[in-house]
Length: 501
Image (cartoon, rainbow, N blue to C red; front, side):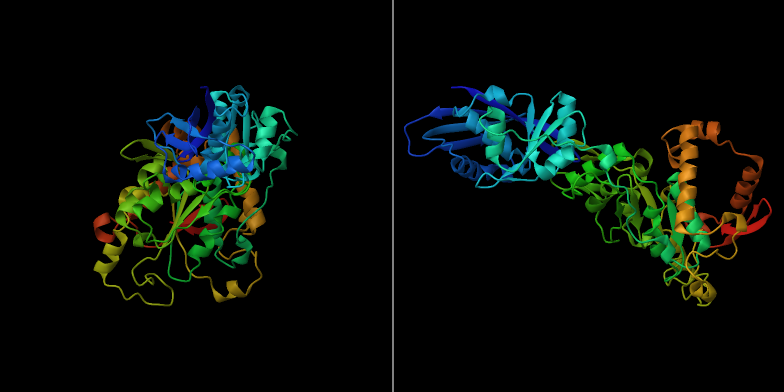
């Protein structure tokens, strides 16, 4: 009796753990084979025994009368997912003597089996490929969709297969080999997705604030009455952000693929997530029986937009504080702890009061002062402290709405130029390049205290401005965590323009 060992992978959060599938066959005088699967398989894997027998029989491999043992190593950790179907089938075929198990060494096998032997794509191809690279494995066999993801790891030889028979023919040399799949970084598309900022007329200060937030990856809170354009502005922020580099694309793809949202190849755009304010703690942070990624992980290297910010549950908002600082979140379950990536840019929107019209130019607020205070106190000071920019958004004037898109907004100094998307995107790109030359790949929002003292020491004029702001700040007890909407004059080099306080 020989033992066949085949390497597979199982998803854990956004990463993958390599799993060795051990197979051994004991021949007995019985009418049909008995398949025993051990090693803490989940229900999906336990049901794979029927798919396994049918797929092998369709490819001319009969298990025969006897007992087939299949064990998943390490045995102490629960295995999940259908990606282990292919290594289970290969281990079984080698264990019953169809070919020499040594031909399977040094390779990772992924894929879900159909009952006829066809291979279906599975999530987590990139995570499994990265885990294989760390183990020193150099070959990966997977369905085409999963292989396209794994091919992003340049050090690996990736072979896309459509059927179990193709894999058997390749590893045994008894048929045509599978052509290697090569994904070149320069073939990755670079395009702008989502609605255009040029569709918004007026709101020049808000557009400039979006550009400032994009330049430094700063958190942004938009405060204004209903219909002012807060949500429209937030949904157009990804158009101003620079395209993700290759390593960021790998991270985005890994997070999306692990959540079953594989983008079909390597991700080329930053994610934008806008969960409803009724989202639960587990939906936002991550959790569940298998500790699946939450919204903050799906927004990794992208934008997380929280509309109607005070309407979110208190525990959900407070849970964002640590991921905003660390860029990761640790999800603890009874059997293990899983660290999920969560480096996202937070953009939020809210009304200034429960009725929404506090500070409106034409509509009077109907809220009693106590209601306004309670509404603002739904956002804690520590969370607000992690949001760098707070901007009051007022509805555009009639003449601004009637003007052509992309025109120069009123009230801004002429040297700021047009608030068109192309110009603002160019300014953001120039600011990012300047920051990269100065401080490396760390964006402005992530600079620590020492880096700030070294790269951006507080000048006299900035100190005076911050001192004046602190003098005007409203105490928490009087108005809550969010100060009352107001506008301040910021002096430019040749005049003044209106900016957000």
